[in-house]
Image (cartoon, chains in turn red, orange):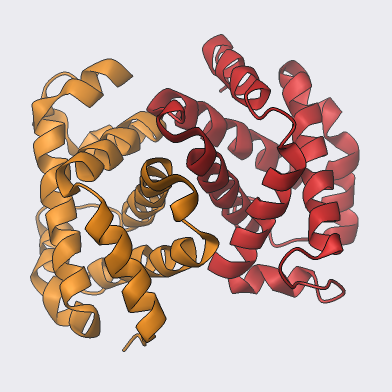
Length: 143
Length: 147
């Protein structure tokens, strides 16, 4: 459960990204494709070479969705409702909590490389909980 | 047997050369106990684990973290014989410690994040990939002798 403190830390951390959100999204995806090659199976229609427009574009989408979720931490279910439908009925990415955890790991690594010590244990915990909560909402309608 | 390319070995060694085993081990274990509080179930006799500050400052956590990472160092020196290297440790974690192997995966992922926070941009995507592979293989090998 996201505590008030967690929510504050998440919002603060997102605030520190200073406009680099899109780069971060693209980097997180790139790392994910490298560390977890099976995740590429969901993107056979993409140019997956480094710096590809499609990776940048998709990274931007993902980060925008996360940013929106962060503005609506008190009501994630509603904020992510459309995305939840999309993942359940169209995309059918392997049950979130499995594949989405790879994105969570890579997003956190990306954040940690940029924030260094500021990616403290407390921030780490809050972000991890947040990503779990997002995955849970996205999985709600799977069956 | 897992195959390690020359590049992977080099990436693993270069990261290992840049970090303090003691610091990273302590930090990784502390984060495990903070981010996944249920893992504290294995450390009832460690004393005060009541808050992130307590956990980070706890000397038993630091000492144990160092032990765990020292063992990781052994793995890195023996990439071509991980099963042999970890055979006894695997039995220990199963028979005496009763640790669900899922926890090895959690600790491995946390270690990668700790390395990322210490090394910054130097922890490139290819570095991360080599290390995710390493922690995955270590976790798998530690579970290997479970029965």
